[in-house]
Image 1 (cartoon, rainbow over the protein chains, first blue to last red):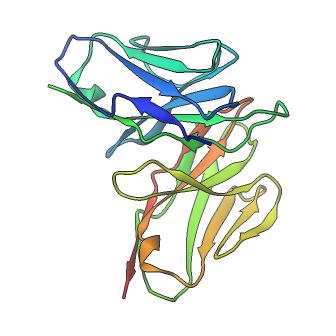
Image 2: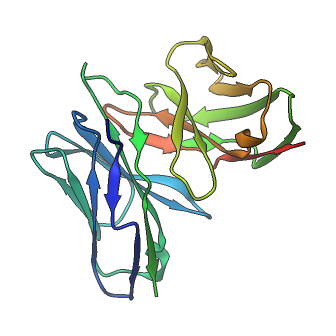
Length: 115
Length: 110
């Protein structure tokens, strides 16, 4: 079974631009979560989508948004990019077969550099 | 607020046993997870505890005490490939809502 895939793997943008990142979960997985990882702040939770609805949200500004499609694929959008948005953005998927929280499987990440 | 603490760095010798501690203070608790992350790669799942006690998976074991807000990951028969960062994460709300610790960078020396 294929793992979590993320595109693109690398991205360079300039301040003020916007960016859209894509995540395809493991087949059959219904929950998709997004994280930002930086050397200074570590791994921080952005949001979780389940059945096309945002179920949980971390403490990030409204410039960070996302959505989930009917096939469970998810996109994350960052508008008005700032230098501090440079980070590794990780997507993780979970099966959620029993309505309980389960193990998350991470994708390889998208490394975003904002100049 | 949510807070998870782990030692920043640890060093151990090949073949030895190492224990990585994690303490947490979160508003809720639905389980504690341990992940391994090699440099430049995504985290991979190692172990999961929701009840107090020890969970063993091969060379890796994880322990949880909910009353003390404490967990540890035990790695036995260390190998060079175990050099990585180890992340402690707590699911503190309904669904997949995790707070991660800063990670412990483990170096295994020959």
